[in-house]
Every structure is written in C-alpha cells, then in structure tokens.
Image 1 (cartoon, rainbow, N blue to C red):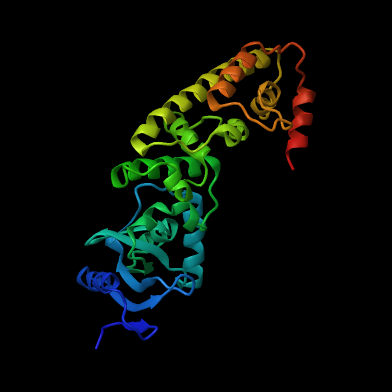
Image 2: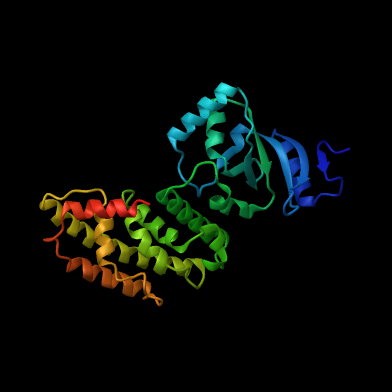
Length: 299
C-alpha cells in the first residue's frame, strides 16, 4: 500500500510518484497525490524540509515590510494555512516561485517543515508573474523579475523566441525596463512605461539573438532618459520642482498621439523623442501646469 493517499483513486503518473518518493528521501513527507480540479494535472501535497526550500533565482527580492506583517499575523494566529507552490530542479532542492515571503516567515519562526503544493513540471519556475498573487508587484519588481526569468530561459530554452515565452513575460516592455533597472535602480520606468507599452513588441528570433536587440532598445531609452534629465535640470533651475515633472515633459514631447492608428517603430519613436526633448522650451513651464496635469492623470 502507498505511503500517501491518492485522489482520485486511479493510477498517477510515474513522474509524480518518483517525485513523491524523492520528497521522502529528502526528509520530507508526501501526504497526498492528487489531480488539480481545473486541468487534472498530478500534484503532491507535502511537507518539505525548510532547509531544502529556496526561492527561484528569477524572482523579485523580499519586501522586509511584507515579511514583518506576515510574520506578526502567523505568530498571532499560531497557525500556517497557506501552502507555498514548489517544484524541484534537482533531488534535494525545491524552488518556490510563489511563496517566498511565506517561506521567509517560517524560516524566521525556525520551523522544520513548510507545507507545499509540489508540481512535477519544471516550467512552473518561469510562471512567477501568473502564480504570484501574494503581494502585488510594482513596475520595478515585475521588470526585474522578467529579465531574471529571461536570463534563466537563455540557459534552459535557448531555441525559444520571446513570443514562445509571452505568457511568462506578460508584456515586452517589462524586458526592456528590466535591463534598465538592472543598471539603474532609480530609473524613471513609470514615466517611460506609457510610451513603451505602445511601441515595444516581442522580438523574433531565438532568445540569445533577441537579447542583443533588447540591449540596443534599452540604450535608446537610456539616451532619451539622459535628454529628459537635462530638461528637468533646466526646469529646476527656474525654481520649478514637482514629482510629476518627468511625466509632464514626456507627455508633451512624445511622438505618439492617441489618435494615431499606425504607430511608428520603436527606433523611430525614441529617435524622435530625443529630438523633441532636445528642442523642448522650458521658458513657459509653470509649476501650476505640472500640478494640474498630475491631478488630471491621477484617476
């Protein structure tokens, strides 16, 4: 008789049985093998040894504030009721693409095990954005996570294209922004995102080849950011200082208009944007104009 329960009562795949046996060998406990109610994929509900569970190498960094809040809640109710999602890249190691904050909390509480839904398919490690609903991503976190996944997939799936990985990446502009945030954690991604969302597309060709073009696109955005910083500096010299100033300037120098049905290419868009920024006249800009635009954009 099996050490674990099987639901429904039919023969599970060899892959999931082998994985359940691996959990036992690694010092954990496979409690049940079951099929998920949506796609009927075989999964394992188990207790994994804490010292063998790590976050995937591709995801965002921990939020100390979120860990602190979650730690206080778990301690207060004296119960852990939200299993992590995990997969195993090799025997003795388990990665969680969804549950790193919970993993960190149980680590602080010095528990020996963590309850997990263990998935046999390795590709789940690259489905972080779809799986992770624990804490909403901001633009920087999402972009850095995507570029880390991109680099991971360069090793795992070199023949794939960006379009093949569209589900994992969610949107092409996150790749470009990820490259920019890697070089400059304070990059004004929120100001450039509206333009990038419209003209940045998934690239054709294999991932290694596409990454070269991605680097070129990031350089174009970086050049525009330098031109934007020059304009902001001129405006500040006039005594005008507002947190929305970059968005304000880009809204007035973008070569894109809402009325356009056919958008220019990425390259043309950012070449024209740099030209517009370099020609931008700051003499007539008032603080009131920027503040009014910020209020209008808030909704």
